[in-house]
Image (cartoon, rainbow, N blue to C red; front, side, top):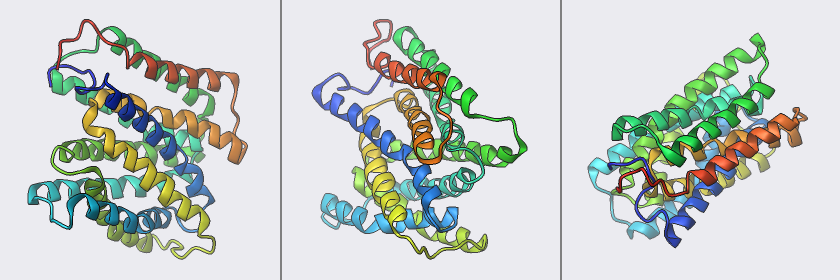
Length: 299
């Protein structure tokens, strides 16, 4: 790939559907923080149930994709490695969610946005130009406004913020590995393998931390599995091969914008005019990143 533009076909009808799927997946994923807070299990246990409850559906979808054939061993290993990083990401993020604000946890958890932009520059040896550069500046400026309004310099939030930041680093590796394995595996197959690997890791972590594993109220956990894992991750993993890491990274910034909204609606966290303006800046960046960049060379 010689350019940091979207993958070939991104401007076609199929590309537009893929971009809509990427946006929709991130909107669905942004609801995860609120559902984790609503769950009456421990934070890592809620991640375990997210995977466990989603896994039967994912396996059915994967079976239909493959006809029951085993994937190639190299692809299986990469998807499994992605699952390990995803499990560690979820454990860190779910612990962080309960120790900081919803918007903070989502914003720091999505430091993957910046890391994926840097990864794109590393791969292409090319700095963003034109509309791409404008979109990056606008997206991160909007996110900074969201963070500035929601973040409080308090020791009460420090641990949660650091855990969310660690989760973002782990999530970056997960996205890179999943994008690589999608060259070989169909989306549901890749997601089913990664999710299956997550289950024992998350259960073991929850038990080691002495968390409450069995819920009294299953509704938040069922919604978490369906909305975050099946719909959110499903849409995102399907669209991964169609875009560069830069585009994928910028769309992750949808999550803190929607998380700020859900934090306001669900938990009474302040949503000011600056928060709204920051969210609009992120939205404008997503429009800009889809414009043709005349200075970029073709892929």
